[in-house]
Every structure is written in structure tokens, then in C-alpha cells.
Image (cartoon, rainbow, N blue to C red; front, side, top):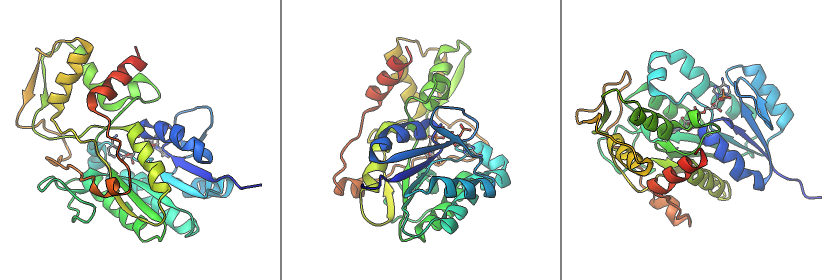
Length: 291
Ligand SMILES: NC(=O)c1ccc[n+]([C@@H]2O[C@H](COP(=O)([O-])OP(=O)(O)OC[C@H]3O[C@@H](n4cnc5c(N)ncnc54)[C@H](OP(=O)(O)O)[C@@H]3O)[C@@H](O)[C@H]2O)c1
């Protein structure tokens, strides 16, 4: 009988991990790793604990690993550097040490490895992170890319339906802000390319089907400021934006944010992938899903 691939997905309870679990399910036997979120077919493992990660690998015996777990908030990483290293880099060191070289390791990275001064960025462009989150992604990428079977998928701001409405990232947070009548402002300086988690999961499946290793960029094709995306969300939801002003200086944050880190998608396109869902379509499906 043919052996079905054991696919290990970390961060499986997260915004992206939830889509990865659904998409990769058909490709083998999926073990989804969570931490604090209980759930059917989710294994709770604290990846900061070396022993726990080692035990997980012994038990799951993965043929493929997609590593998505990380602290994704740049402000948190800026303020808690040691702690951020424990999750965003240390488990990658361990994966690289413990996994046989024949086991593909796909690492989810970020457009924040770039400084935002010279977009669009190709896979060959030099990395210059401007915050700790980006620096940690660079360190983790370097480890993964030393492997003959290591791949890096860089993605920008994610949108999509999380396991719950409150975990639905940008769309949830932006809509909550629009619904709050308190006058406020939204960043109208940094250009973002909100990208659907289901598209990214499809790209991950596609990359796993490509022999070899390397870096891939994936991004939606529509750029705009957070204020612009909020206008589109408000329009879809039939809400007013009159109490929210555009902040053309960019909203102050503890960690510096790069201005425009558009990722060029020519390489992934050349491999035959051509799925780029528009913001409005994604937002509509998320809003309808939680209506
Ligand atoms: N979100 C974005 O806009 C964005 C943009 C670019 C790149 N990325 C990258 O994409 C990946 C996924 O991001 P996301 O938005 O899906 O993140 P997320 O929704 O915050 O999910 C994070 C995941 O990591 C898990 N986790 C947290 N602490 C852990 C620990 N100590 N041990 C094991 N697992 C732990 C969480 O598990 P529990 O919830 O069960 O605790 C959750 O499954 C990350 O690598 C992130 O850097 C995200």
C-alpha cells in the first residue's frame, strides 16, 4: 500500500494555519500543531520548549513540514526580543537540526524583511529589515535556506477568515474600528497588499509540489493604504467612515513599519500559479461567512 505523506503544520490554529490545514488535507495526513487553542485534530505543543518539539517530531514523523507559527505583531517583537526569538527563530534551528535533509521544510516569512524603500522586491533583492520582527525572519530564513529541501514563502499583510470572527485579523480589527463611533484615524501612508489566506494556502501546496528549494514571493496585486482598505470595507458593510480621518503622516507605532514592501510575483507566476483574489471578493466572503 502506498504510504500517505505525513504533513506537519505549525501555527495550525492561526489565521493562515486554518487555511493551510484545509488546503493541505487532501495531500496527505495532516497533523496541525496549536498552542493555546484547543480544537479537533489539533495537537497542543509549546514550540518554545525544545523537548516538546523533539517529542512532536518523534511522534508525527513528518515527511513535510510547513512552519507557520510565530509572533506576528511587530510591536510585540520589538518590546520582547528574547521572547520573540524563542518562538520566531529557535524552533527553526531545532527543525533544521532534527529533520532529515530529505524532509521539505517550508517556512512562512514576511515582506518585512525589506525596508520598503525600493519596491517592488524580487526574491533576489537584498534584505534590510527595519524592525526586530523582520530581523528575526531574516535569521530564520537563513537557517531554512541552508537546507537542500528548505523553502521560504514571503507574504504580506494577510486577510481572511480566522477560526473565529475575533481572530480574523485585519478585516475584524478594521471593521471594529469603523463600528466604534469614537473619532479616530487610520494610516494613509504605508502601502499594503492585503492577501487572502486561502490564496496563500494554495501557493504553499503549489510550492510543495515543486522539486527543490528556494525563496518564493506571493502577494495580491492591489496596493493601498489601510485607510483606503477601510473605505472599501465600510462601503461593503454599508457603514460610515465620517468619524475616521486619514493619517497621511502614518500612525505612530513602537516598531518602525516599512513604507511599501510590494513583493514581485513574477517567479511564482512562471511556475504556473496565477490566482490573485481581489480584496473586495475576500472581504465579502469573510463578512458573509460571519454574518
Ligand atoms: N498575519 C499577517 O498579516 C502576516 C503577514 C506576513 C507574514 N505572516 C506570517 O505568517 C505566519 C502565520 O501568521 P498568522 O497571522 O496566521 O498568525 P496567528 O494567527 O497569530 O497564529 C499564530 C499561530 O502560532 C501559534 N503559536 C503561538 N505561540 C506558540 C507556541 N509557543 N508554540 C506553538 N505554537 C504557537 C498559535 O497557536 P495558538 O493560537 O493555539 O496559541 C497560532 O496557531 C507567521 O509566521 C507570520 O509571521 C503573517
